[in-house]
Image (cartoon, rainbow over all chains, first blue to last red):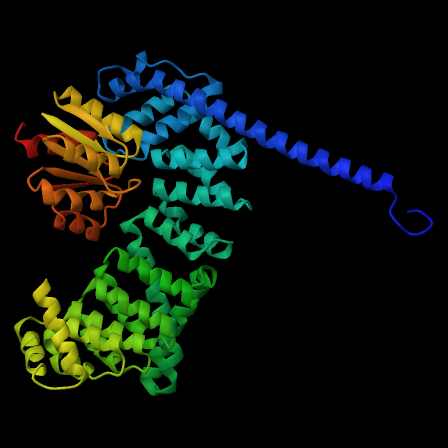
Amino acid sequence: MNPDGLVSLQTVFVLCLVFSLLIVAFLLVVVFLRLTNLFQEKKYIRLEQDWDRRFLLYLDGDLELETMPRVEKSELLYWERYLYGYLKNIRGRERELIGELSRHTGLTAHLLHLLQRGTRWEKARSARFLGTLGEKRAIKYLRRNLQNRDYVVSLAAARGLAAIGDWDSFHEIIRVLLQSYYTYEAVSEILVDFGEQSCPLVHQLLKNNVLVSAYRQAPLFQTGHEARASQSQFDNALQLRIRRESELDIEKPEVLCLYIDFLAYFNYLPADRTIQKIMELSDIEEVTIRCLKALERIASPETATSLVLFLQHENWIVRSQSAKALGSVNPEAYLDELHHLLSDQNWWVRFRAGEALLKAGSQGLERLKQLTEQEGEPAEMAVYMLERLEKG
Amino acid sequence: MKILIAEDDPQVARLLQFKLEKEGFAVSWAEDGEKALEMVLGEDWDLLLLDVMMPVYDGFQVLRRLRDQKPTLPVIILSAKGQEKDILHGLELGANDYIAKPFRPAEVVARVKRLKGAG
């Protein structure tokens, strides 16, 4: 600064120069990265053309594995990208052939190495490929990577283990994912990767939750023998909680909803009564709504008696969802209740009740026709529903 | 016998084209929904293999639009959307068959042959 306290011209000049140099350096880095990317893409296209004919002949059984050349180490990640394009889309014998080819060309060994010593992205790519391939030798490295603090590595390892179907890691994966930064959507993706076979495990988690919730409510009303039974039930529940729930966050409504959604996604019928019980015990509306949606999807007639209880709920979303669920489950048995709901103050509730009546066969249709001769909102909804039916 | 593959993944398209050409079919490829619709309406085809998730128009949109003009063209949907509701939606729109990805290439060929009575 000069004696007047102003920044000198020289300082301004230096600052501008430094700033300009930083911008130029940044642009150079961008150009370099872009050129590298273009070069890599061009190289990949050339390699892909080289590989394609021979690979397709091999996949069709026209070329023996022994005739397939090994791939240069510098080209292995291109090779991984190429094979993964096929691997993710096909299954059966052809997938096994890709596995044999991957081993023959040294790719599997290379990816197993990268799983241990690669960068975060190399570990993630290796986990993806070896997981899809179902490579059992990758399991121990994937389990280690699951504990990695880097979410890219950890999540890729979880997906790899799920794709391989490593059931011994199931609870650990859920525990790690729920205690990390992941969204519940990421956890549900992993569950879907494990597939329908994980439904019994998730169902067990929900059943444990019911035990805990039931105890909390039961002692207020029970005495003597019932209370002792309840105490024994609680002991079981407590042990289960210590072992699992405390780590798996089962009591968090979001997690509970996640499991309910998952079981509904696979229409897992054995969970119908458990979900029904959770719905009856829960005082969280979001959980109630998820249960109703799940029961609508699972469509078990056993649960209809509970669904009816929610037709009079104070929350209109719960009322409308329970009417919708009842429409899928057993509307013929609850014509009066659905009829009554056509007078609800909320349009959506009336709409869902009308839809449920339409699903109730000839009796439901008769109710709607009778209503059209009257006046008011129930009649308007009945006319609307019959018009919809006519339009198909 | 002419088959059109509407598929945005070039590797899947190449694999199917290779397999079907080996079986003696004449195969062409469209890489997005718009091009597929243009090709399918512009020429005569014996069968359409249709992916669902494609750029411009998805497979369901293509199917909906082509059914007015080509109601009898056999269509097999080949899609990663393998949930029951997706399958039902595809069949309701007029698809003759539905194969979920990941698929067995030999199974696709077998279904194509069955649909065309060439097996």
